[in-house]
Every structure is written in structure tokens, then in C-alpha cells.
Image (cartoon, rainbow, N blue to C red; front, side):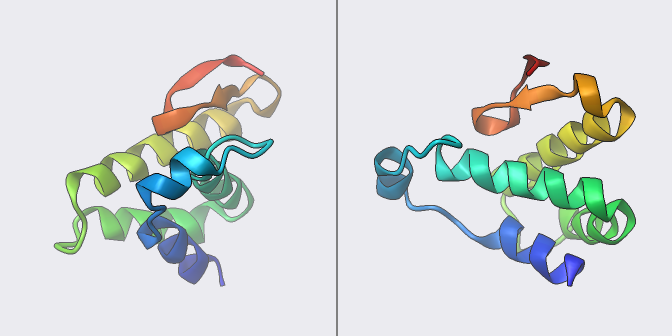
Length: 99
């Protein structure tokens, strides 16, 4: 299930109008999508990580999606290394101090 979920979260796109309109308690839909992928990588790192790494070289991805994968892997690595002090995830995968 993890590989399919990782692929689905990677390939789904939030329309610009929905991203601007849907500011929920967890942030924009793009931030929530990133947080979900990081959580998935934290629970099943080998299955989800192998899937995302295989997708990096897929001819069907654009540069934005490849950067999204790298941001996700970096955030997941921080979380796995030190869960209590993992940086908070913000728009575009930017990492800010613990929180």
C-alpha cells in the first residue's frame, strides 16, 4: 500500500485556485501533501523511499516534482534522525527550527 500511496501523493496536483482558497488548520494543501509524504516515509521508510527514489528519474516528472521529492526526503531524514527536534515543514518544503 505504501508505494501506491507515495506515488499518488507525488503525482496529485492541487490547482492554484484551490491552494489559495483552502487555508486549513494544517496550512495549504501543498504543505499538507508534503507532511503526509514525510509521515509515510517515517512509518515505512524503505518501501516509500524506494518508490520515491525510482520516481526521481521518471521521464513523466517535471523539475518541480523532482524538487518536491528531494524536499520530502530531506524532511523525512531530519525526522528519522531526531524526531523530537525535527524542523517544522513550511510551504515548498522549507525547513524552519524545531516545532
